[in-house]
Structure formats: C-alpha cells, structure tokens
Image (cartoon, rainbow, N blue to C red; front, top):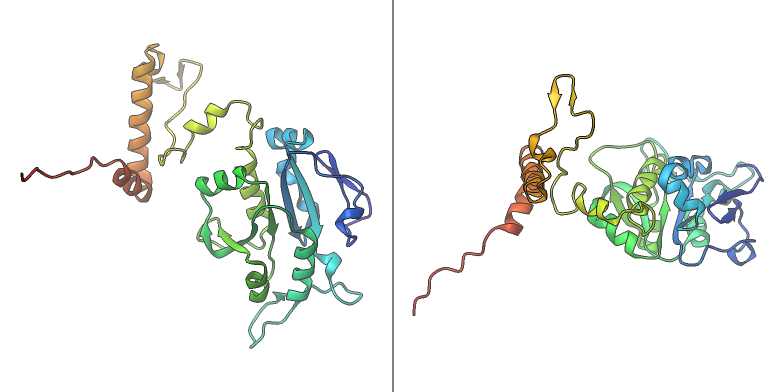
Length: 268
C-alpha cells in the first residue's frame, strides 16, 4: 500500500504501525466502528463505499479503519506466513504477525474471523452487531490462521456458508454490508428492514411494480385492490409458502415457534 492517506468517512486512514493516539483524525462521535485487518487493503472499502453504505460512510454514520497485515511482516520481505507445523501443504498466518496487527487494530465490539468452521452468519447476528459499537475483522489467507491467535484474542469464527473462499475479504465486506444497512439513518426507512427476508423468520414475499402488465404477466389483483388488510394477508401467506417450499429448515423453526400451545384438558 502506498503512503497516500485514504479518507474513509470523516476519518483519514493511513496504513501505519504508529500508535493509534498519533493518528491525525478521530472517529466521528457515535459512529459504528469497523476495523479490518487484511493483506489486501486496496479491497476496502470496495462496494461498501458505494450507494447507501458509501453515503453513510461519508456522513460519519459508520467509520472504517483498514490495517495492512503486511506492515507487521517479518524481515525485509515482510513475511506474514510459514509452513504448517507437522507438515502438509500451504502456508499459515504467523501468530506473531497476526497478533501484532490485531493488537494495534482492535477497538470496541467483538473480534471476528471469517472461517468455514464458524457459526453461520445470519440476520440475527447482523442485528446484534448493529446494536453494538462496532467490530474488528481479521481476513485470513492461505491455509488459515495459527490457532493460538484465535484462542488468545477470543476471535469469533463466522461462516457465510458451506464453501471456501480464497480469503476473508469478501466475507468481511458481506458481513459489514448486512450490518451497516441496519444502522439508524442508513436506509432512511426503518420499516423496510422489518419486512425483508429473515426479519420474522420467513423469506420475503414477491414484489411487483409498474407496468400493470409485462410479458403477458399481470400484477396479482389483491395488490391493486387498495385493501390493506387483504394485501397484508397475501404477503404473509406468500412468505409462508416460499419459506415452506424453499427453506424447510427455516419453516420448521418458524412453525415450531408459532404452533398453538397444547394445554391439554382439565382433569379436575
């Protein structure tokens, strides 16, 4: 990464090993703080700097501090990895390198590590993160991270699904996007987050807009009826149908939660 400073929101960020209190600018008051440790600092903010999340970043609703893991590398080649203990293919991020970078980057909120071994990231986790002050995310590379770093910092391993990526950067951006959009003032309409997929344990209902007919297909009549009660019933029924058909795992949880209580009969 070159020496030119970068502006993430209202905070000027420069990849550096200097102590934090020597940084020129401070995090905007009340901003949700995202801190990312990565070998690919140029990947950030990426898409997070666009559209609504980008506007929120520039407005100081959230802040981004990117730490280049290579700045903490060893020798003149800035090595960050070494061969696995016990043999085997690939390379592992060294604990002395990753640990030093995390120590410098850490801030308020949990410390996360994208990993296929972790808890599945979901909407509930995004809401929990959005309610907090921020998060620090270490993006892994190669075969992974020395286990001692995970243990020492209490890193929370988080998985996007049952697949493997070449690194944690895309996973970090995905988790940040899902979280930041829930912050007050980002979407502008709080009701929109209450009706979307997973907010009530169901997939979202279908959406339609103008024109009234397209490619021989019309808008369901109920949506143009002007009867808000019927519209709400239709949307709920469609959400339940789609969840039951496409995500039986979600449906099983939802159905169990909303099953009527069987109080039995009074034997008096």
